[in-house]
Length: 174
Image 1 (cartoon, rainbow, N blue to C red):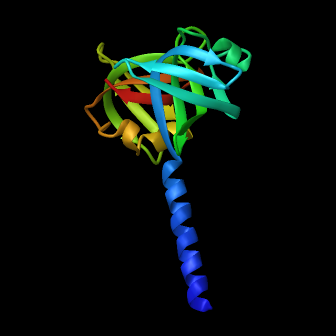
Image 2: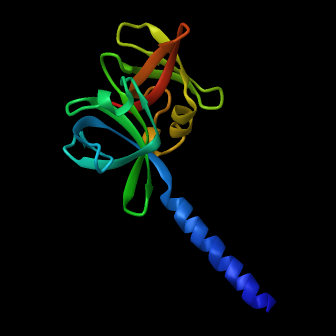
């Protein structure tokens, strides 16, 4: 009896690990090709021409768009953070870039402190800007999205300004 119980617990723990492995956060940067409120999907086309269909749910956060999804339309530049479970990608957060959305700046990383959640970037004109990383940006900085983003790496930082501070929501290698 105890052997069967141990085996059952082992199988259940392996299954839960397999499902947890699928639920990994990733990000895609591109231009919205389609928003379908009926099927709750958003299609984002990346610079390399690939397209990713993301499902949005009631808990999906949207930044830089007025009235939730009404501000995200075809042609809108976005960074979408999503999780994958099985074959379905679910948008966790969608950040609009540009007018009324996130600002962008390019430069070279002069310092990064993932634990302290700060990123220092030196722009082409020699000025240095310090960004405070959101929890998601700090977490993403340790994953494949920001892999290789160490001192000296050229990046684009997408940020907002709140209470006089620059808040980095996402950054990527250039």
